[in-house]
View 1 (cartoon, rainbow, N blue to C red):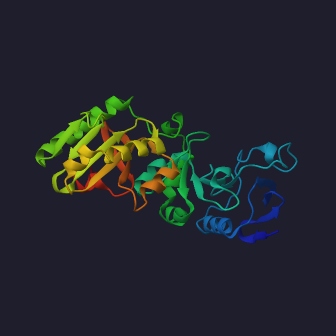
View 2 (cartoon, one colour):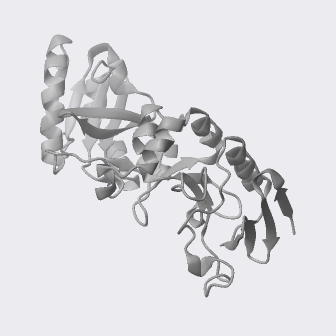
View 3 (cartoon, rainbow, N blue to C red):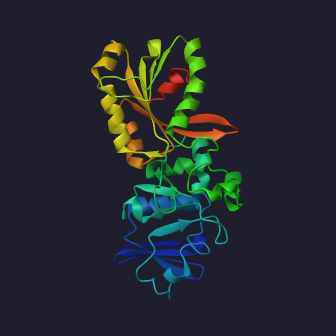
Amino acid sequence: MRRLELPQIEAVLEDVPGAIEITQRGNTYRARKWQLTDELVEVIQTAVQFGYSALWVDGHPSRPYLRGGPQFLKGSHHITFARSHGERWVFVVDGAANPPVPRDVTFNKGLRDFLERIGQAHAWEHSGGHNLRVPREQFREVLRQLDADTVEGLQRPSIRETYTGVRPITDIHNEAQLQIRIEEAWRPLATAATYLLDSLEPVDGYFPDIVVDAGAHGVIVVELKYSHAGGVEVNQLEKYLRLSTLRTRANGRSLRGALVARDFNLETVEQANSPATSIALYAFSQANGELRLHHVAGKDILAVAGLVQ
């Protein structure tokens, strides 16, 4: 059994059977299934180094999970991190992160705009709190860029709290409307660059949403998904890339896919970042009436072709 003492934040963490027991400033709780592996200790020490020294906040974990409560022995599924006990939590290591070795760190859903601003790939939780999962290997770099003003903004009530993990989209309510907006933005660019842009044209019995013949930049097949996207959509796009008509059209040029959706799970992000894939991921949002595509993973083929900035 391992024990980690952090006197600078008045905390002691100790392995117990099936959990870590965490004691700090008068409260004790257990994080079930976790143990003080080297990887988890590194996450904890990195968090403390960057000032996230509160391992519980008011209501997180809730009172039944604190020592003396009916759920104490069962244990909470997460370890909480915040700047102080009276603020909102900023990130957690939870039961979905593959204990006892954390695969990723879950950031508060209110930090989504920040993660996109710094270009950090992340996965949106499709259930639970709809928060944002970042691979553990990139955790330190995210904290390095997480500025105090952004964390302060997390403490203030915001209109984003009325949405479950996604930004408000005021006039896009389905894939058809998303396609219209993308085509409106791309057609002038395609005309100026003498690209060919096909929309829902049949290809070997299939109907890709958009096919862009981008000249020297090759052929780009675009698949749209209004909500979150995962393996099913990636497989569909890969099937398009194998169609003989599209391969003939590419004629030795690159043939790649772009998957546009609101969110992606972590496995899909990892798949797109693999050197073996020809698919890039883009998350869409809307700001001041303008549709924006944010590069998430894979080669940024749309930027190379001049279709996004």
